[in-house]
Length: 409
Ligand SMILES: Cc1cc2nc3c(=O)[nH]c(=O)nc-3n(C[C@H](O)[C@H](O)[C@H](O)COP(=O)(O)OP(=O)(O)OC[C@H]3O[C@@H](n4cnc5c(N)ncnc54)[C@H](O)[C@@H]3O)c2cc1C
Image 1 (cartoon, rainbow, N blue to C red):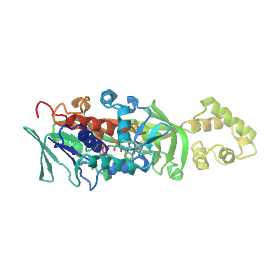
Image 2: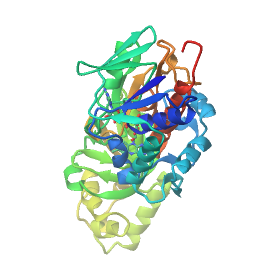
Image 3: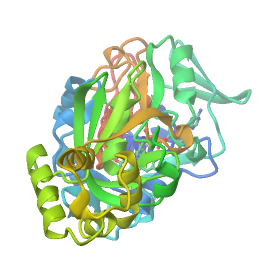
Image 4: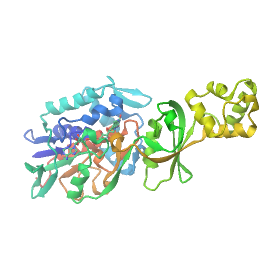
């Protein structure tokens, strides 16, 4: 039997290893066909080069838009199975607040381990081989790369990724291949991406990092909240909580606003009384000096200007002015006007419809013999190791089942 894997990212490498470990005949050929000059380029960029590989909290609510599909996949390849898989490659994992990383904190260790195991198991790899056509035949599929016939394969696992960060290889080919096979797919849009926002003070705030709460409202209704490190950029907001909110903020037609809470530990009234007390106690100071004791200095000018205040003594600040400032500290609005684009996106929303794939095997319901795994599917996970975990779990399952002989062989 010949098995082709289109795309040598995390899902493709996991699929190749899964297939090689499950094959019943040593003569079965497993081949990764990779468009780039080397496999796994995206893995090297993950987790800021540290590769946040998984998470201790594997609740399927971290996956969208079809957590029930993910749950079914995770009953076949459980979160524990995936951790055992990494361990079987010689990788020890360490936890940082629930996020799992390789002990070396080096993404290259993950890629090296995947490549070494694939090689040890005799998986063949052809780089600079973009597959652009899959022609179904009587017994399997003929694959074509730039007009070149790559031969016939009994099974084809498509792990060509989505469209996020195309500089690492995946730029929407998976969806073109899906369309060629008459698969349905949900339209693609970027997620886990920096947001562009409207606020007159962004340029002066660019580069400033703070710990804050972040709330996303759509058409005035709160839809999601988060907290953590927020980064101001010249065009908008970034940082883990913002990346997590980006999925919903960028939904088509959404009138999205990010509300920053610089004092998330306090209730609304508490913040007002606290500021009022400080104004009384430090009445001899001017406002910026008083605020410098509680806020990042770079925020003070923009905040004061936003509520029409300036360099005035704390003793002369009126109650309504303190109220206005307190409200702003806990609800600083940044209307969303766009995103930083595909090159900066970490993940793709949309992809091959899960309704057309069997979650027990990852085999296409529309086109038996074709298997799907990873980001090419209409599944995306939150920030925190969920996407690499999905790539590994779905890849292992696809590889395992693709390698098992069936009646039609
Ligand atoms: C900067 C960045 C940081 C990230 N950090 C994290 C993190 O810390 N934790 C986490 O869980 N997730 C992270 N992600 C997301 C995660 O990396 C991806 O979801 C995951 O790698 C997807 O794996 P995949 O194998 O499905 O797709 P990809 O990794 O995109 O692999 C697809 C492969 O297919 C190849 N290919 C495409 N088309 C063809 C074709 N026609 N023929 C042959 N080959 C083709 C591509 O070149 C590529 O090698 C990050 C993503 C980015 C961009």
